[in-house]
Each structure stands twice: as structure tokens, then as C-alpha cells.
Length: 588
Image 1 (tube, one colour):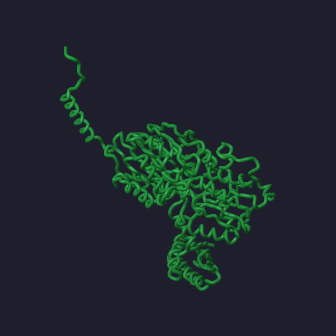
Image 2: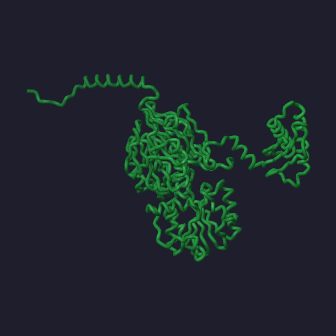
Image 3: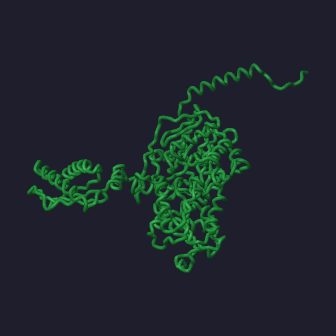
């Protein structure tokens, strides 16, 4: 009897393997580019500056949205409150949307939620309890009157959103409730890390790095990593060092300390509370946005404060100035920028006295560099000592710098590296971190808002497909109802001024009644420009009379257009400026 041996038919196995390989190769050749296994990542915002973060993950018939942020307007967009992402693509594919995961309490990640929810009723929102506390404390959240499905997610847990499995983990950051994501897709694991820092002076012995390294394993497909501060060398400052600086400022007893921060920064508020209590001082909160967030987080236990630490308006007069710390709103996204009023000596309650201290992050000031310098000057003239401390900024104190980003890249080791959350210049600079670390250029993807990034059996490519990403403008209660013409007009008024030309006429007799009135607002001085105004009046008179004689029927709108165009050319020749001209022609 022959002894039994392990089954080993090399020739048969070889033939089977060859047939299998041939069949697989044939399948690959016939798979369409947009196969069922394809993953699309579409940035609707976040790749053209700071803010407006919003990203689409799409596979089969499922869409997962990550973040819904807003962007603050620039200096060339006067009178605008916010800019939010264009969601036309999502509205066209609303049946595919399975939910949105929010990853950071900062406005650049959640600020657009109140304005977009009405477009997607009963949307499933996934976020941490702390993030919901900040989101729901905003005044504009409930004013929209929309319904949504609330899902509180706990760190180190996984959730199912349609065909996507998402592992959620806390990120070291300066805001409570921030999370990172590991999204399981048909192409493999995709990490989303927009808001994080290592909170370490080195990348060694770091629990966060150990965790994401273990989670990533060997099959991580892509890493979407934030770019806001990657041009800064070294590691981001530790939160403990920032707390020590705040404590040292509040410890001084020269006068009142005014300190400003963003409403979303719960951890920073706790640091201020700790310093106030450590030095037996009292805290007053000025600004509805800060007060709403503070009270909400206090009720939920995210902020711990002793009884008697906070003083109300009735006790302000009894509190010595050197024992008072005022937490004051300052961002131009707040209800009232109290810090700016304080700097201009226009605040209704507080005024700067000699020896007071003002501490604020520069990012609070719109325009930033020149505006911050002007604000600092104003405070200094009033006698205050200004703590314009960079590490208090969200950018310098919160987001990953060069070494943080490099350490995370080495821990996760994705096949593809996709910089996000920054201007195009920053995206490329962040991409260089991977290239210098040995990644080939083709594995570093520098995207653009609206450009579809496709991962399929060909691995990856930025496709010619583009979805709408034009800015949607929020102005007061209106969303998206301002055109570029309106913005241009506002910019013209702010830079060049306005010129009103009032003319009364009798259409029947074809005569101008009385004198033509010219009034300047922000263009030239009314008293010292008599000669110029007389020339404007004479030219307007000639234009109006000529048009009255040329046609049988008087067309007021046409006359106003002609006056506007001709007087505009005249003023450009005379002054090298072209204000907004508003002709008012009335038929009496």
C-alpha cells in the first residue's frame, strides 16, 4: 500500500493558474472606466484658501459628505457675511446622499450647515457630542427651521454610512470634538485628517501616531491631509505651552485683561477659566456667540467652572479692574465684533485704561497684517499692552506643521497623498513633503475645487469632469442671491465713491426744471470741487436736452444710461477715477 502524500499536481495547478490569469486579464480589459468598483473624491471647497471645506466620497449609488464649511469674505467682497460651497451637484444627486460626517467645530468645517440643511431635509448628520454642542449653540442654526437626523458618534467607534464603513478617532487639536476618519471604500482605506497636530515636541512615543499606524495597516489607499500650516517648520506648539502663556498674562495685576478667541475653541475657554480661578480673578463674557457656546458647553460638562467665577453686568461696578478678565468676541463672523469696538474706543460698556492688557489671535482681525497693526496701534494709544500672540491663532496653534505632517505620512504610508484645506500654493508645498520623502510625483495628487478625482482599476487620475463650484454668497438672510455685478458695485462704492446727479424735467415742454443737483459721497469733497461739479452739471444738461429733442417719446431709463456713461468718461479724464454714478431723472 502506498503511503499518502500531500496533494501536489504542479502541472495541473500551473494550467489552472494560467487559465485564471487569462480570464482576469480579459476582464480588466473590458471593465469600463467608471466601473462599479470606482471611487470618486470631489472637493466642493477647501482647495482655494482657508475655509469652505466640503468633500464628496462617491461609489456605486452612495454619496458620503465630509464637512460643510464656510469661508470669510476677502477685502474685494464688501458687505458679504460668508461664502459657502456650491451644492448643485449634490442637489442633482440627492437620492444618493447617505449622510454627512463633521470633523471639526471650526466654522471652516461646519459653518455652512445652517444654510445648506434646507436643501437636504432630513439629512443624516454624524458628529461628536461636543461638536453638536457648538453647532447647535449658533443662533443661525435653529433660525432656519429645518429638520435633520442627529447621530452622535463616539471616538474609536465605527459607523456605517451607506456602503461606507467609517472608523472615527479623536485628533490632537485645539478644539474639543475634532476627529479624523478612516473611510473603508471599494478601493481600500482612505484617511481624512484635515484638523490635527501631534501636540508633541517630537514624533517619538506618540499615542496618536501609534494608533493611526496600526489602523492604517498595509492597505491604506489614500491620505487626505490638511495644508494650512505646513510651510511652518518644526512641530506645532503644544497646548500646555499655550496654557502657560495665558496663565502668565492673566497673572499680571496692572489692570483689566481683555482676551478674545473663537467661539468654537472650547479648550481655549477652559484654559482661560483655569487661569482666572488660579489667580482669584473674575470672568465676564461679552458677545452672544461666545456666551451661547460657553453656556451650552458648561451645561454639557465640557467646560468646568466654579461658582462665583463669572460676574454679570450688575456686579461689574463692584469688581476691581485688576481682578477682572473679559472674554470678548472679536471675529468679524461674530454677532458684534466687540474687540474692534474696544480698539476704536466705541464700546458701550468697556474702555481701555492705562495698564490694561489685550490678548487676541491675529486671525480674528479681517484683512490681517495691516488691519492687525492698526488695531494694535489703537490699543497702544489708549494705554494698553497688546499680547498679539501668534500661537493663539487657529492656524499657528492648531494645524499640523511640516514635521507633524511628515510624521503622519510616515505612520500611515498611503499609496496616494492628497493635500487639502489650503490655497493652491499651500497644497503644492504640502505635496512636496511627500515627494521629498520619496513619493513619486504621480502619487501626489494636487486637486482643484470641482475637479473629480477618480480611483478605479487604473488606480488614479484627475478627470476632465468638473462639477459646479462657483461661490454661493450669504448676505444677511439671503443665500446665493448676490451676483458678481452687485459685488462689483459694492467694491466700486467702497473704493471710488458715489456721485448722485438729480435732474427734474418736463417731458411735455422738453425742458429742464431748475438747477441740476450734484452730490458726492466718498468721491471728492463737495465744497472744494465746485468747478468740477459745474462741468458735470453743464454736460448733463447738454446730454439731457439733446436726447429730449431727438425722440418723440421720452425714455427716462435711456437718458439715465447715457448720462451715466458720458459723465463716467468725463470724470475718468478729469480725476483718473470712476465713481459709481447714480443719475436720478424725474419727470414732473
